[in-house]
Image 1: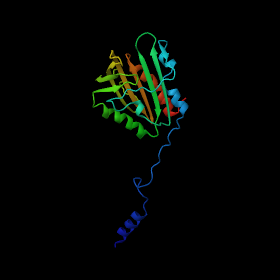
Image 2: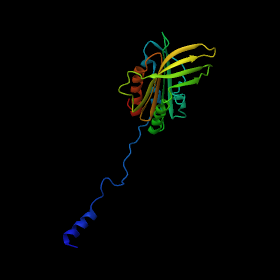
Image 3: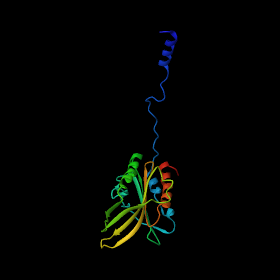
Image 4: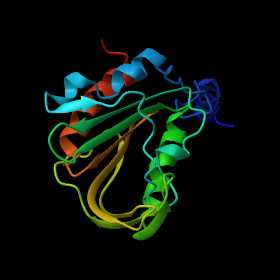
Length: 213
C-alpha cells in the first residue's frame, strides 16, 4: 500500500465517533407537580367575579362528547380538582376540572379521544335524576385563537333536556378541554361563553405545570 494511503487509513481508524452515533441522549427531568398545585390550578371564586356563587362539593361534569368521552372517563389520576359556579342572576353555570396525568402521552390520548368522538354530532345521555339530554354539536367557540395549552379540543353544543316528567328545557353549552404537559383541564359552561374562563384557568394550569410561583 502506498505510504500516503496507509497514513490516511490509520487516521480514519483513530478518528472519534460522530455525534450522531447510538450514544444515549439526555432526557429532561419532569417538573414535580403536587396535589396542592392542581388544587390551585382550578378556577376559584376570585377568578369568577362578584356575579357568581361557588357550588360546594362540586362533582365532575358528566357531559360526554359523542356520548363516549368526557371528564368522568378519566380514572385514578395522581391528582385532580373540580370546582363549579352558578350565576347569581341568570341560568349561567361554569364547571371546571383539572387532572394531573401520569405522563404527557396519557394527556394527549384524552384530547385525541375527544377529536375522534366528535365525529358523532348527535347523541343522547341518560340523566341520573331521570329523563335524558339530547345533545348536538352546534359550532365553534369564539375567543380561543390562539388555542389553549399544547393541545386543545373545543366545541359548542346545544342541549335539549327532558326531565323525568317529560318537560323540556333548551340550553347552550360550551365545552373546552386542553393539555399543558401532563395536566389536562376541562371548562364546561352553560348559557355563558367558556373562553374567558378557560383563559383564566390556563394561567393557573401553566403555573402548576412549570412549578412557577
